[in-house]
Image (tube, rainbow, N blue to C red):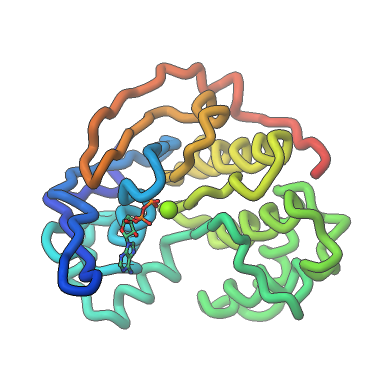
Length: 243
Ligand SMILES: Nc1ncnc2c1ncn2[C@@H]1O[C@H](COP(=O)(O)OP(=O)(O)O)[C@@H](O)[C@H]1O
Ligand SMILES: [Mg+2]
């Protein structure tokens, strides 16, 4: 499997009042296509900051990120935005859906930004919603969907453009165990069937079974990095359960 993303010497500090806190301390990181890489660690250890610097959302103070062969932070801001739109999918704890839009519209909106025609966008969005098991619910708005269903809309929105980099920050922490399993299985499928590099921040140890690799972050440093040796084939075709 090939490297999708690598970073060296990532440092980030935030100013709080008169002092600075070092949130990332010269972190080296890489992630492979086809892998689910989990980033675990206590609250405040820098996980979200790491993902933000890897994905072009937050500029590190030092260090480099090479994403799909591109030196990310050498690009101008507009090009970084374009890179994210073209190649990155994001899933967050809070779903980040527009309350006025149907599930289908949430997904088509992004695809239109990516340059698809309305008809292409509609077709691709419907396929992505089918893939997450929401075909029958695609005309519902967030208020009419359960938490698990909302997160599946967010996943459909993230995977519809077939991104090579998929970032998830605590995607299951607002969900019960069963819905959490559905979410991680879908992320796993994005890695195995679509070759995405999935980088998933979580402190839900039940998700470890779906990880190819587990990286622990503590106080801004990577303290362990191991491959799990999980037999991926057994997990490649997850059955979807109700949300
Ligand atoms: N924009 C910010 N300004 C100041 N401090 C921040 C900012 N973002 C994060 N921090 C601090 O950086 C530390 C790490 O945050 P974060 O990366 O969100 O950790 P995690 O995701 O592991 O919980 C925390 O102490 C947090 O308060
Ligand atoms: Mg966080």
